[in-house]
Image 1 (cartoon, rainbow, N blue to C red):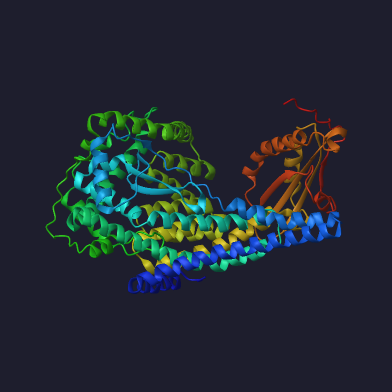
Image 2 (image 1 turned 180 degrees about the horizontal axis):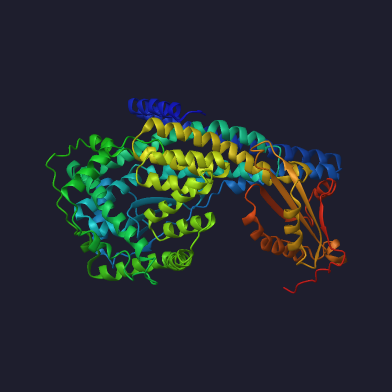
Length: 639
């Protein structure tokens, strides 16, 4: 819709001003846009249904139903099935541990009190999870038809750090969304977007001609609809804040935002410390979340409090997140931060869980461990490997460039950024064109808030286009964190522009059937490498290698390696297709390690058996890479 993010932001600002001046009319516009999108899809559904009905009627009347008519009916029926299938978007239940009234009667009483004040519908389930967040979800049982179940999710960290009044403010904000039917509207918008995206995706998978019409609709209409619905959802946040203020007052609601930011620092410190502990301790602590109660007791200095609040106040409104900025939310509540503000930390919310508080906390700890135990183990094992490798490398007298790069990454894995930087600096001194080291060194500089890191990331992107997208993303995030809107917008535009080109390149390279194929130009050394590996498999009959002629990034060529497996007579008539295909996939998976030494081109490999268009590869001059005249027939595998 807009090529530059600056133009898009200006457009959203205009919409925001219009929505503020004419709220009811703006809401009506959003609903009409949604209705138009539904009508568009419904119109095509009726059109295809009518054409099928007409064909059946004419065939019945003429008493003649030939193969061509049947094929046409099937062709027209595909979009109908896809539209029906896509219209019932399944939304999973939110994660968390469900608690019952008998477990936490005081918490349920607080929620009932808020319900009475805000006139909200019944909450179907109350869940507690381990995130520093609270949310409300309305999950429709019947897709676009609604019939919702209401879920309230409260993060245990809030219960461990907030006072009862502040927790009440948080819950009132979330329930305010249900009171004003925000959750229903947001859910319907989500379902509509997914329905339209699913229709296009499935039609494109089928290569159906109607996919072009739906793609045009999606590309033109969806950005327009997203812009309008984005402003509507931001309005919902202001309305929910206002409702929370009606329940607990503007002062407490405003203070809740401040305390939320302060405690978030302690919450982050807690889990950053976990990342360090995981590299030295084999087993995670048994109370990973409930131990936050101790971390929340750590006192922040006056300087830290000032820095956190000041940073939050400086953050400008973003158009990537529907939540308003910290300052705008406080201004809307008419809450002014006193210069002599001194926080009074009150952590009484856990009392709302009553006598079962410890048992509930234990369940949340176990819940966290069930999701993170394997990850913890992987961090520990990885750290031990790095320690061993560093010891081995340090015992060597002369390190090669690859040795120093490995050493740098192992130090990085152990969290020793200074030593990692020393290794990377030595590499760049002798080889300033190493894209991998430029990238990592640039990230390390940005983590120290040094603008020089941008230079290294840009150089890495120039040296290898595959890392350009990630490099631009990091540069954008860096300037965004510094509230440098001009540079952030510039690199956001660069990221968006390159992302489109990169996606086109990925599609172009992966779809070899639609790519012009040429004779390969790999060296004899590389050819021998592939042939030596292919010789390990007696059931490989032939292997072909060709080069793809690509429009995007031609300086980084791509090659296609196709393996033909000797499947035997029964397989030739499709009696054992799965066995033959599984064997091809197994061979190709074992071939994957060869890609690690391929650094100057893309290598795609696939089984040629039963692959349409295989004859195209065989016609290319010198495409036959390997032939095994003594290949054994693949035997049928018992299942």
